[in-house]
Image (cartoon, rainbow, N blue to C red; front, top):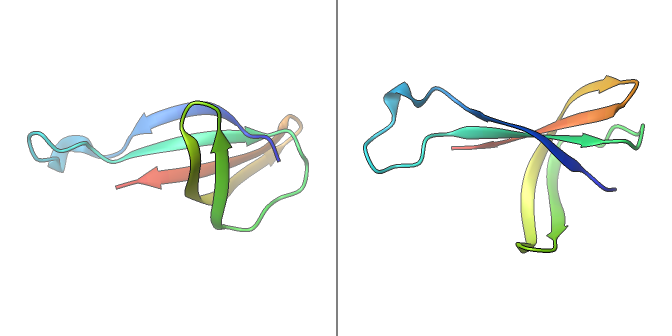
Length: 72
């Protein structure tokens, strides 16, 4: 199902080491009302090509379902 990136957030960067990317989270919105279970999904992106992300359903609202991907 199509997902749209709707947010990016740094996570607890205070313990980061110099020169190391801090952890962050991406939030995606799916307008499809079905809630997908948490697991690894294969993504296709025009610029990045294929990639795999572990998604966690975050919330369901009138505009759709939000999913969270965290990177450590």
